[in-house]
Structure formats: C-alpha cells, structure tokens
Image (tube, rainbow, N blue to C red; front, side, top):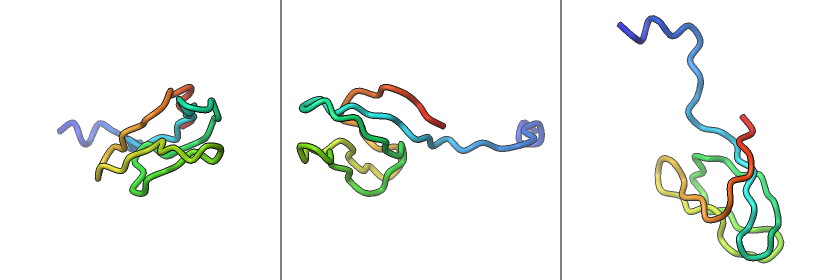
Length: 65
C-alpha cells in the first residue's frame, strides 16, 4: 500500500565529497561504490566496497545528490 503513495521514487545512493584523513585532499566518491577508491594525492584507500553501501574511510564533507 505504501508503494503506491510514492509518486517519483528516488535512489538511496548519493555522491559524497570526502576529505582524506591522511593528506587532506578532497575527492568526490559514490556512496554505493563497487570498486575500492584510492586518494589521488597520497594513494591511501578512501572507499572499501562492501557489496551494498560502501565503507567510507575519511571525513564526509558534503552530500551532493
């Protein structure tokens, strides 16, 4: 019954602005990433793929959409 009340479904995944905890570089990542993401500056791993929601290893600064 609740399914019919939602007119336009929205995805649960979002893009996140993440700051690396080691070097401070800011990078945009996907919240449901299926591939591990590394920092472009120092090479430390920012996102660990877990099958659904990814584990973010850094500071989330902003949710983009």
